[in-house]
Image (cartoon, rainbow, N blue to C red; front, side, top):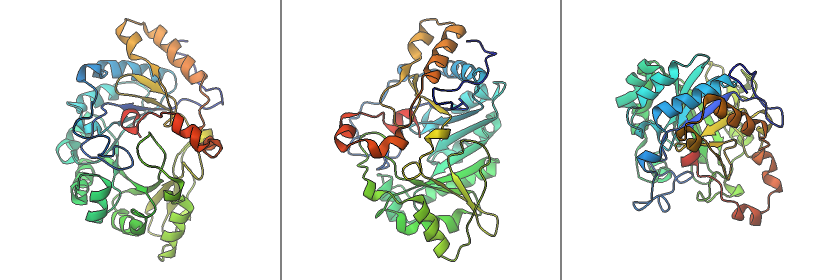
Length: 342
């Protein structure tokens, strides 16, 4: 397979368009649905620095992915802003021809210090996680008692720097579902606000279907608060969020991975911080790219490897979730979200 090949399609006909790149497994929060403190405590063994892909290795792989059809790059973690000199990586990625969009998912805590440099380096957008505006609720969900004003300062820094901003709120019944209207009403004039169904990513977040608030219920609740929310058309094939707008032109999104899976349109590959390639957020194993990289593999060798992995892809976990028994789920060790990126 050569760099001039047309965009790849997997075994189910889905194209390769998006690459999510995890740059670290470390985070400065301990959100209960991702890195609960009782598991990721002071003695937890995070990846050593030498195990991480270098910026040059990441850029080389990204360039190869782009030659196979990838148009969008997203930096993730862990918390990506903990990776030293991250603007340098953004600048390297921005020089790859054919990249239409470079974005990042972050908790926002370090944006006041880094937003300007990231924008100057070529970052276009950030998605900031903020699960509640109530200090007690947010402090409990992030596991460390960090207050929402710290994240709000990061959002303001991103806006001031000229970055596009979206806000992601993970919704858990009995935890923060009572306060969704507050998030929407307070932040809709600043950014696109998206509500995400609580997902069974990884092995330690205590997921239970009873805690999932279906997106249709979220929309019904917000509409019931005197809002007039109307559906908006998808902007491109495979868009994960269903979009709604209010009368003032503000945009709300819902991501319904549990109750309305979008596996059939999924065009995302995920590269971990140590060079494992995953073809699904709920994967239990990946494909090692670091070993051939460091063993001197040629671009042609790597293209053949990447192409073979994608063309053999059949993942549709979210569509099959209802068919998987509880006993089977316990036996399957999924990759933690802090390793694979959200």
